[in-house]
Image (cartoon, rainbow, N blue to C red):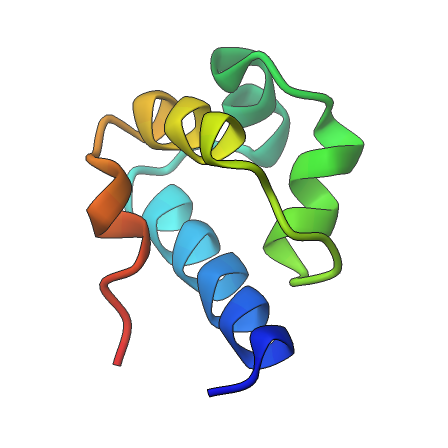
Length: 72
């Protein structure tokens, strides 16, 4: 899997979890203490988030970091 494919899959997984939990994008950004523009780019697979940012997103979603990578 190419790095770009991984980023797209990661972004899609974050969107999936966010929607399952009925969390708006702006609310997840606030809860995760990250810029909503950055979250938008992460969800679109445009940027490679740091481990620290992924930990914040996972916390905001109420999941573990490994759950962000649970895609087939």
